[in-house]
Amino acid sequence: MSPPPQPINLAIFGLGRWGSHLLRNFLTLPAARVVAIVDPDRQRLEELRDRFALGDSVASYDDWLEAMSHPRLEAVVIATPASTHYSMIQSALKAGLHVLSEKPLTLDSNRSAALCQLAETQRRQLIVDHTYLFHPAVQRGRELCLQLGTLRYGYAARTNLGPVRPDADVFWDLAIHDISILNYWLGQNPLAVAAWGPMWLQTEAEVKLRDAGWLRLMYPNPVSTTLLEVMVHVSWANPDRQRRLALVGDRGTLVFDESPQAKPLTLYCGHFQTQASPFVPTDLETQAVAIAPLEPLQQMCAHFLDCIAKDTPSSISAGQMATDLVRVLEAIAIAAETGQQVNL
Image (cartoon, rainbow, N blue to C red; front, top):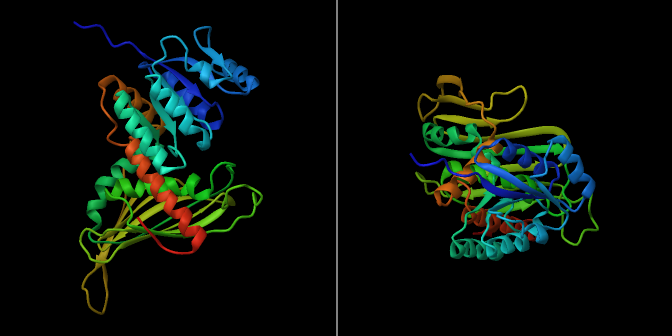
């Protein structure tokens, strides 16, 4: 009988709000061995060492280049500002390390594509933390889309009062979640986008950081010549917290809702009895879909380790998928700036 595989030695770069969640999850996974944590804030390092009772086997670094040379390091987890991703990921791949990066992969699709090519050349896994794709409701929702009949339109809202990012606008920070879910459910990328939104909070920033936005995504419709349009509203300046996405078909509507009072995934069935007046609703039924009680972030972390162990690219959140999302976000930025629809 062959011995069990050894845990994968990894370091976590960036220990802010999301980095601390990543650290928590990797510490609980038997297939991982956290050997280093990295953050320029030494006080933050000490706080997390105390919170998670990290022993001498876990090193602390305030310099990520130095951490990259940690003995027997095999993988890095990057949870730093998006503007730093390219240089960190490139250095890690060149050093022969597997990489899990927080979204977005980079802020430039050409650089993202170059990193994908480098990962392939180096035969290393490059996976991006699009956590929603590992949510059991999102994964189940992909199957249920087939029960909606002919898709007609979609809508989404993602709002809250903060957190406000200084390195990416509200489209890059929030809309990217809904786009990733829609692309996953529909099995395709949008053909065109239109976008608009104001700036209130960081008007002196070098790049335009919109605090709220409205987005129209136009997808191919597999059973119609007309495009499937989805409207998305995002804001980090609205205390009315919403996390809701829906697809509407001629046989029903599928809703993914993270509100505390809502079921995560609901299928609303119903259609009109005839396609001529009078239009009489029939077969009305509401189904709260059972969802496994799994933490999406932990599922994503375990998936990263599994891809390394099996030497297999991710079928869910690989670098190429993340690069496609960056291209969509670039088109959205152009559309918001020019007021014109942008084709992809």
